[in-house]
Image 1 (cartoon, rainbow, N blue to C red):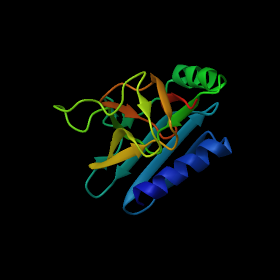
Image 2: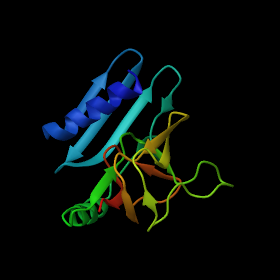
Image 3: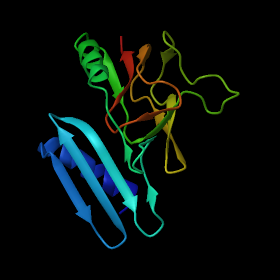
Image 4: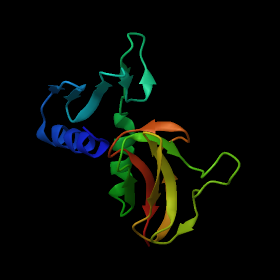
Length: 161
């Protein structure tokens, strides 16, 4: 199962309202648990090599990703004020800079144009540039640099006016 299939499965489970889904095949095992539309745990194991795809280690050898509901509430509140919230299209590690010695792609208050790179998200050793789909001004940056992010997690708030 590739990353795109996993992302689509997570999106489907999230939208369906199911609380838990387990899939086991010869080469991998995946468990997705949700509750009240908040993703609580996503576990992906590649059984032959025993690799686990996730972000934060847990003492039992499993890994867990927890989405903070407060950031979604803040994003929805700002979105109601005609602001646009840019959300993560993938699970991975959020980076505000192209490299540690370079300046950030964007800062709060900076005007951006359609197609400008907002950040980079690393997923499975691939660095994915996240580009703006609108022009406007950065109102708020909701994710911390070098932190794990979930699929559909709010990253930026943009004022399109």
